[in-house]
Image 1 (cartoon, rainbow, N blue to C red):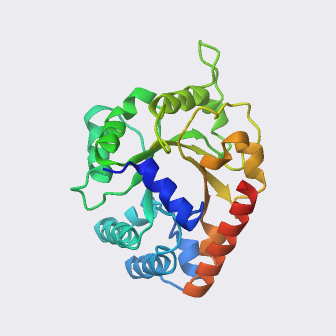
Image 2 (spheres, rainbow, N blue to C red; image 1 turned 60 degrees about the horizontal axis):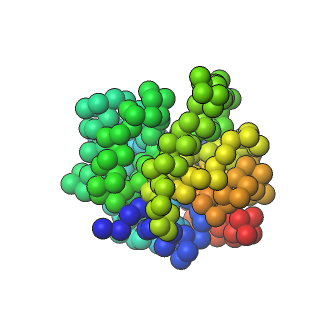
Length: 276
């Protein structure tokens, strides 16, 4: 079984280092001229998949924007995941789950078990019930060739109050999470399957990413204010592992399939130039 890390390296080598979010929030549906209901959600998701799933490395559906429509929204999320993967894109499901014991095991089964209709290639998780609480998700991912992206340094203004807090050993909470991921990925070739979410807008924080040996998801590009040139300042010598993530900057080009593709191509080219 190929690991997620290996599949990601292969996908980015072929398609470029770009992740595009699928975030069908109400304002974006309205901009596309779609209704804020299940029909609008389905049209939006199908259009993004048609435009991008056969050409970008990673698509990242935000689960909450599908969940808000109940069971029918979840059904569309299932279809979006399946069709994206069939077209060759890796699917990183943005769920940011964080829990303990059997509950985390249930989340892992829902999103990473091949028997699940919601099975994605990787998911996002929150470690702030303690890194050990993530073990069920890490285990299911490892057993099934999946990936897990752990929130590390996020760009929301409330994040530093927790992530930059210093523990008894003198390390910040975020650096502790970074070091835990580094241990999981130690010795993995060509890349570990356990990644971190590091906001592209955070600037220099003094945290050490050099030993991570795993993918670094960089949200915040485009509409949130970061540019590809900011990536070098944030990630330094770890640029080769960065997966830049765009959402509104690309999605606002819709509903035209051709315009969505052009927007994704521009973002891919700009990131390639910055990542060098």
